[in-house]
Length: 313
Image 1 (cartoon, one colour):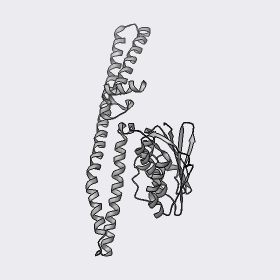
Image 2 (image 1 turned 180 degrees about the vertical axis):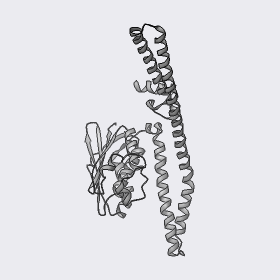
Image 3 (image 1 turned 90 degrees about the vertical axis):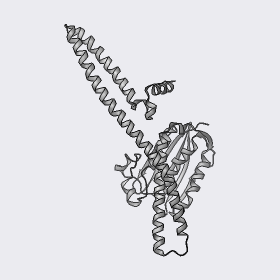
Image 4 (image 1 turned 135 degrees about the horizontal axis):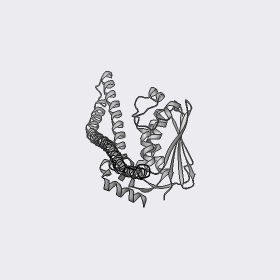
């Protein structure tokens, strides 16, 4: 009932055009400041009636307070509206550019693959084409992450739910990363995946979160390391654990770990291909699915990330 009332207020105040929650909406903040203004005037009025004899002083005091609050409210609201509009334009720009770049990037990748397959190439030419191919893949990964971040702002995406087997989804993600794990000399293990776990949530977005976690666990692992994926049942919840034997996360990096474009200092030293969006995507996706994410880590020993999700069948 409360959610419906909040959504109705958001609609009436026009907050939906900025895709902002109620407490960040400029119109709502302006309304809230107006209420505070009225309460301040009423308080000053009763205070004046008790301690000030001249009613004109009381009226003047109320007028001054109202004017000050109005000017402050107007200035803050205008600033917030401009920031919200800039944020909206930025998101639209990222969305449009990401979509428009996908087609020429795909064509570039296919052309590079064709050229690399030719038999008459010199070693120098192969090296240059390999560089083009590698950087094309990095650009594609960045575009994919930017598109996912843009979709996170669309609340309608998470309303699409389906019933599925979490065990099968994890197996699917593991299979898609097997070649990468083998090439990195990393062993992937599973635990407690025998008992079927059924979920009713957005399968596509959950898969995206798991892919980011497992990809990170492989990327920032040590040679001949391990990645262990396990499930733990709790009352009305399921906990997914993704543990690695990698480089770990330093204390100074831990508080920034889930921020956009942030990469740990030790992670940046061993791998320069990351976008810094993976863990941000994981946290936002799981939060919108009604769950939470946390981690435990030891520097140079490894990290374990936990995803807790409600079981809704």
